[in-house]
Image 1 (cartoon, one colour):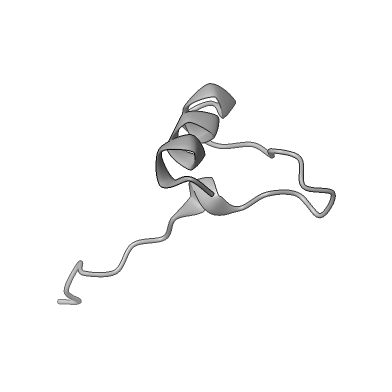
Image 2 (tube, rainbow, N blue to C red):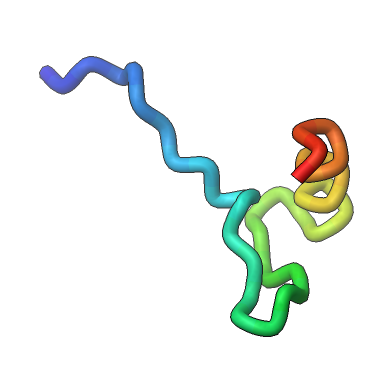
Length: 39
């Protein structure tokens, strides 16, 4: 089995124009995660 040490951080993906794009957890959650990470 593959170790689960790597993760995909899908909330960090933004559109070409810098706008937030779809996220399974909702755009409000994506915005909040980016604020927490200060991205």
